Image (tube, rainbow, N blue to C red; front, side):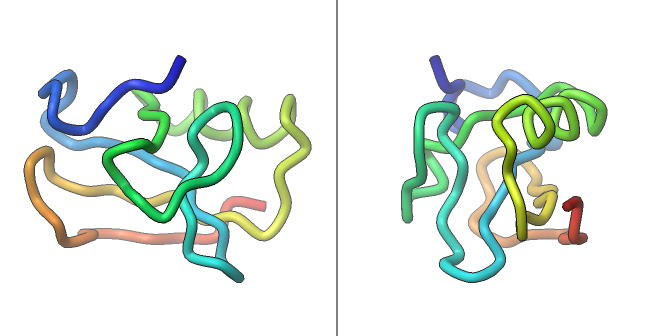
Length: 77
C-alpha cells in the first residue's frame, strides 16, 4: 500500500515519477496525483522498487513534505 505525502512520515519525501508521462508510481500503478505516490524512506528503497517492478524511464523526486515543489529530480533507471 502506498504511503501518502500528507501523513508527514518523512521531512523529505522520495517518490518515483515516469519521465515520459510525469505520473507518480503508487506501488500498484501510476497516478497524476503526487498525494497518491508511494514514498520511500531512502534512495535504496526507490532503486529496489525500480528493479523489482521493472520500472524504466523513471526519476527520483525529492520534495519537502507538505510542499508542492520538487527540490531535486534525477533519472534513476
